[in-house]
Amino acid sequence: MIYPTIPPFDVSSSSLARSRQDILTKPSGSLGLLEDLSIQLAGMTGKARPHFHRKGVIVMAADHGIVKEGVSAYPSEVTAQMVLNFLNNGAAVNVLARQAGAYVRVVDIGVSYDFHNIEGLLHRKIAFGTMNMLKGPAMTRAQAEDAIQVGIDIVRSEINNGLDLVAIGEMGIGNTTASSAITAVLTGLPVEQVTGRGTGIDDAGLRKKVKVIEEAIRINQPNPQDALDVLAKLGGLEIAGLAGVIFGAAAERVPIVVDGFISGVSALVAVELVPGVRPYLVASHQSVEIGHQAIWNKMGLHPLLDLGLRLGEGTGAVLAFNLVEAAARILDEMATFDEAGVSNKE
Image (cartoon, rainbow, N blue to C red; front, side):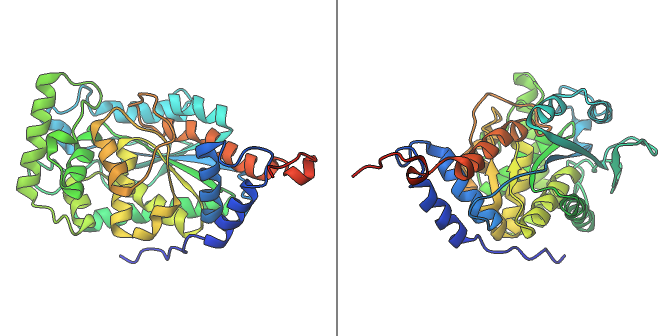
């Protein structure tokens, strides 16, 4: 497929932001990562003093055929049930989005359930879940590409309606198994070093999960030099869809706040396919899923928060909205030494 053209990081705007940070009423560098983040945001947006007026989180939902192998503590029915919870504003991401002044957009890109025409849900189903990757590829290459295009189209529509800061989140029972498989292949690390307990499996369940992933990789033989091949053979429709969101947002200079392990895998796939999107990513937090750190390391990104989260949904990314907005506001609204009549260092 043809991916959107990604504009280069705006060095001029980031330099202007850095210069402004140096004359604000504080010791230089005293706001630490908030200063660095503000400079990054300026380069992303192409604005020396960026503002964010409409924040949203796009939650992609899909099921996974690998659940049939007993790799999750929860049945696949929970995916559809949680989608309904999102639509009823009852999930953690809904609460945190309200706090951050953001909206939640929920997408059925591959749930194994017929929602009919329920209002509030974006109906973009590619398939009723992926196939069991222990028996062969999780999806066809065409399905992976179609799912990526869904993400591109959805975020473009949201941007046309004013979205200027986006978070990515997901829901899909079994998706930590798919994510660990992709992470192992794209980082070259052993499966056991990137596989965690997901929704809370016990020690025996974890050992089984590792063996299932190792066997799925052996059976499918994904090409680590072809991220789309890895995505199609081992991934999920929501993972592909979120990669599309990243492409579409970066193409329009909209910063992308990446959530937990699964969203991180989407970001890793996106960066492997189109390296130019990396400067547009904000790493929101460090999950307790052990593969998450490997992903950040691979991309050279440093998470803003470490709260022991392992929920997904976009929760950590929405929490990070507050820090992103704080960084932008400090840069824009804080007085300079001259404006405040405060003596600067000699």
